Image (cartoon, rainbow, N blue to C red; front, side):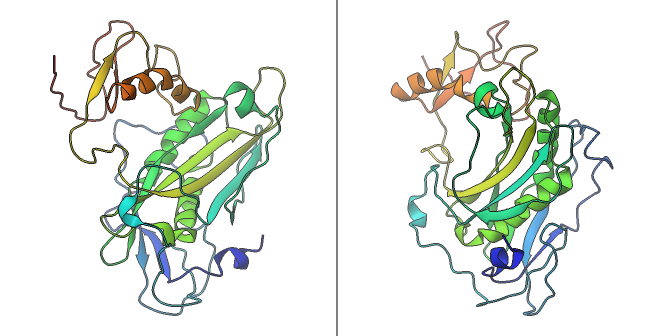
Length: 306
């Protein structure tokens, strides 16, 4: 697909750049060194609307890319009910795709019209679960600017997960540039301020055919997006959790520390039972001692009933 065909309808102009409060990433070679999560960088990105109507078009995969305005100065939003957004899949306009072979590096990716993808029945991701995913969001401000919250943190977590799953991974720069390009191409799907967000789902999967248990010979990095509301129907109100004593979310030495796709289907049994009883979600315990673990990145407050 020609790049002009992909970006021909983008409007209005946006400039993608790090905030003035950002700092350099803590390592120089994103392909070989893993991130130090004890001191995450403060780098954040935003997509800022340009006031000038004429800019030279440069590659959308480079930081600081600009796009020439081709139609009107206002962004016409998609025709959906923004007041009734849940956390459900809504097809959008474009997705991003990039491939590499085993032992290689990801190179040039491209935006494509959103649609189904083709996979061999013996693809590594289908047979052995060799895949990872991330999740982040883009928001629309009152002034029309679009914001991303620390996408490089998601990129570094994918690098860490890919190492655990014996997969190559896009560099931090490739990941962030692909996210920004995908958001720009689907900007009419970013909800109005206060109505929700544009959920961004990067996927890394073993797409090559393999029969015996082994790393896939080919890998695909894919990003698609969907407008969403709150994940829980309660919104920002307190939610009701049930403690699960028998089924466990992660075990020592397992893959609970990375976002591999195989971690999630295993919780459906406990989650479905919890929702059938009126609970919002499940609180899993430490599998060895069956206690609530105090380790984690989120500060949570619990009120116990019964």
